[in-house]
Image 1: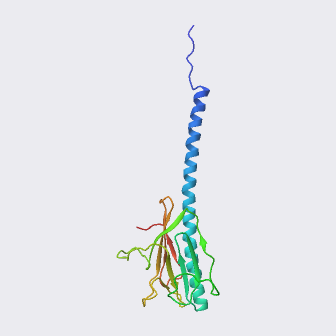
Image 2: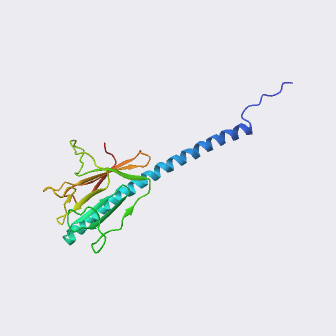
Image 3: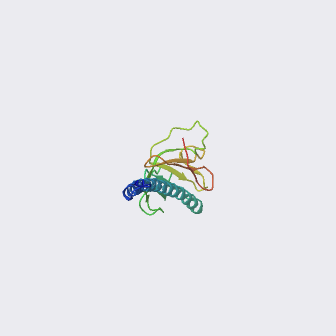
Amino acid sequence: MRKPIARGFTLVELMVVVAIFSVAAALALVSMDKANNASTDLDGMANAIRNAMATARLRAVATQQLYLVDVRANSVQWCQVPNAQTTACPSGTLEASGAMTFGKGASVVSWRQVDDRGQGNMPATLTPPAQVWLMPNGTADAIPTTPVPDGFTAYLLSADGGSKRKVVLYPAAARPRITDTWQ
């Protein structure tokens, strides 16, 4: 009598396949979590810069005083300043926000003294720190020595280099804009 031929997989073979798929799934989850954290840090930083600019603009118009938004590589702060030559938030009696500091998931890598509308022929980017003054009439000016308000653009990059954001403050716009790409 012939012995029947066994068909199918043994329990050991099935357990090996399940183990391989489990390891692959775990590696995929860790990778996705890191990417998600970097994107979350980047969005948080972009929103904080946008909110600081919007708040400083509102305060400048309401109080008819000059305000400065000071953007560092990993922090942003707004404050009332006595004049446009002031390039850092002074300590003392003037109104100021606390410095909003961010983790290592994102940073401001460069900025321009104009509003970057993606039209080319832009001035060179500068390294942080960056300053933009909000005038009592509500305009934004990154070069207060010129007669025309210039606007401001900050370029943010995630720590892994995979995600970018651009925060643009147009000279006379109601609020700053955030975009997902820049060149």
